[in-house]
Image 1 (cartoon, each protein chain N blue to C red):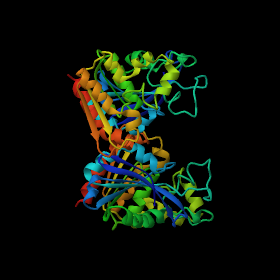
Image 2: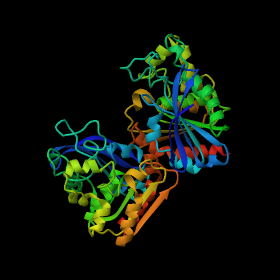
Image 3: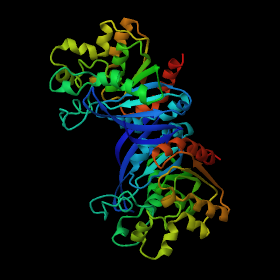
Image 4: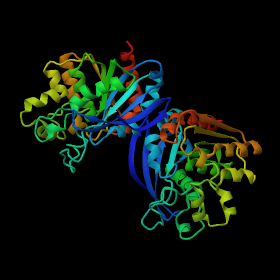
Length: 278
Length: 278
């Protein structure tokens, strides 16, 4: 593991690291905030999955999680959103596919299946790596994300309810298999067997019987993608039908940006901390 | 005035604006955070001057001031650090001069004197502009900054003690007329009459009789520029000699980055708010 940067912040350490990933067959960069409490004991882990076009850096710079994480004693892990590199197939003029748009799935279609395996990377490889290299208490994990990363957080929680004590999202894509801005990507990664999409779609996973203890979702009502990409009412319908408690906070005047995410970040971290410490 | 972006954050509005500046003879971009309290009354103003290589955006993204500013009812103004544009003389391979390195002075040497007039822009033009276009109570102003911007904040406060109720800095360049990384810039902007440098040097302004009520300075002890560029002990000597109260917090383990600035931002804003509300 290579340390790309490390700086003291709010009493903890904000670091950026790079390692070789066998899941994606590329170097992968990720950021970890280690809170001051890790000096004396392993600490609970909160995964933050980022949205389209992002790397680890967008949330690291703009999501304003460090003060709350340091107070609450939470490690924050920020993975990249896709594999990257000269040998990784990409469409450089398409922000909704390829680099920055891994959609937290394992591609099955060539040539994408060789590298676009973010689901395995996030759920299998990176946790093992954290366990060895960081003071992470993996018996206490939470997961959250923004937009495409909200989709990632909710789908991964539904598939690993035993692993995550809590799951939340900011402006998640709740039904990527039908949303304008994600369906074309799923078709390229997963092919035209639309049954395969169900495994990476929050509302359809719930329809197919997956369950989670409860969800917290914040959504700005001035979000420019509300109607075309996000559609939180589809999540509400699915949760209501399945009996999954959903706290859906519609936030007046907020858009899709980190200005919105950062505003409610401390609330989400406090909510996770409460559940991680039970 | 052109609005480049505007987003609700922490109950207020984070905006980015562009206007034509007669001081610099260029378009100038700046950011303003308007706290929710401005809905009912004009609010006090805190200027944040940024460091070398920065635009308004670095602190806007990374300084984590919005939560505290919204709680305390403070407007935060983030100007750019220099004029910019195709007709502005620059040395593109030199990060310590030209674009991103205006040093908050009015240049007197050709060809720089036509545009590099950040002192006039910050102390005269932008305040007038704020008074007309924003709910700013200019009878209650504070000023702060980071690195080169800490230099800007302290020198401007010393020259306008009647205007600013408080002044603070993160890792300021306290004696730019002798620091390796600033003296060459001053020579280009101000020529070889070193007497002219005194007007833009915190320690020498104090030596020459300028006074301010008190200063708050935070400085990381792992700052990579501590010995060569910053040298807070020179400020301490000057303040001690002049009887200016200085709170100099040396912060163990912190570097020069926004990881450091963001950690102590809320403390500085609370300190300013206390003085702005007296």
